[in-house]
Image 1: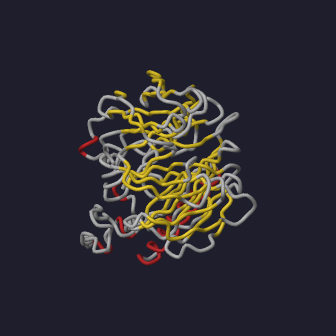
Image 2: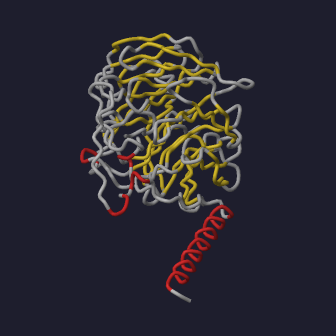
Length: 398
């Protein structure tokens, strides 16, 4: 065989191996291998020029690191200097027990349980990564945690804090007052009220921000609506009712390239895929019963979808917007909210109706640990996490 023939044979052999690997991954419920994107490797061996963000960002917002990846700062192990010495812990708010279970992720054991206010919903990292806030919803207070030591501090009075976010410029805390039907802009440190924005929907609770930070989209669980909010103007600039019978939108996440928004719908059992700029009728992608929490993988390839009603996690490929794998948690399970470990190897999710937390291997989809906690665990926070600043919830870092 001549040199050309040998080269062709080698290429065909490599293609066959790659195809077999992809088929095996799908059969085992693992995500198929994905080739590196052009943004992560230089073409033809020529080093890529550094990206300089010239977009019209919200004034004061940190520049993007990669035009094609909003989560470029969230790679495995890329802990900000300010959080590098924080205690690695998992904080689990138990809504019906009025406690926070603190888990050591190295042993998968609860090391202590701390009593907080009434109805803790989420544990939220502040914009500057220096405080973790326990959202005591029915108790109308935020309890601070020092992430360096894991010490709980004196509560701050804040009305109806179902969820908590921060504007990309770090100037405002954004409290989702679900019961009061309002979005309240507060000082991010003292939590003093700066502006109250009444909203025309029911169950305002989750949000995410556009690539330029100039608007954010909020889900309204009980009326089935989405709101589009002008960040600087602090006003509603759009409202969209989701299709279907009795939609119940939950978590929302933007794609790495910033072009699509994924909205979990617990009632319709899947995610809506939306063009946030156009803010027009979205398309629907089934994932599983009770779709709830949404979490990007550390390599920005997949979106983990917790299907609370059936005890599964669906993996959506950001490249294709299709489900490429589904993992089943053994026995009865109710995966809800959580986050991904700093090294990207473990997906942590609360078991809302089973008094437990699940630790899932992201390479295999297998359950690593099942940890007993309090009643109705909800928005747990894995800390520390990679990223430069926090937009809130259980850890939306960029």
